[in-house]
Length: 111
Image 1 (cartoon, helix red, strand yellow):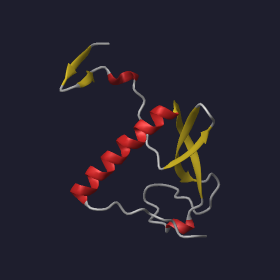
Image 2 (spheres, helix red, strand yellow):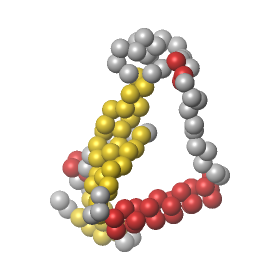
Image 3 (spheres, helix red, strand yellow):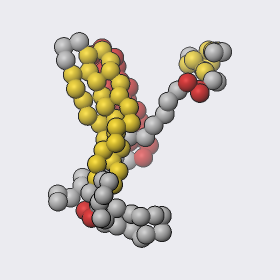
């Protein structure tokens, strides 16, 4: 891979080796040496009678759909790296909120 340094960052133009995914669920498992983050995505449960059958089926209310979580990937890291990611995310969130206002957390209604 060809890597060049630009503005203090490594620019890798060959991104085919990078796996990208979407996650709206995360779980963690940890032990003394490291922490594992398991990323998933909420999807309608298989066999759910309320699950949409196609794109033109109308809009369902969130409480009508029974969800399950499909695992998309996992990352295991040392506690030192976890702390670094905590600091990076905190700095990013603070900057985002300075520019866009407070991030509101969505809380699903209880069934």
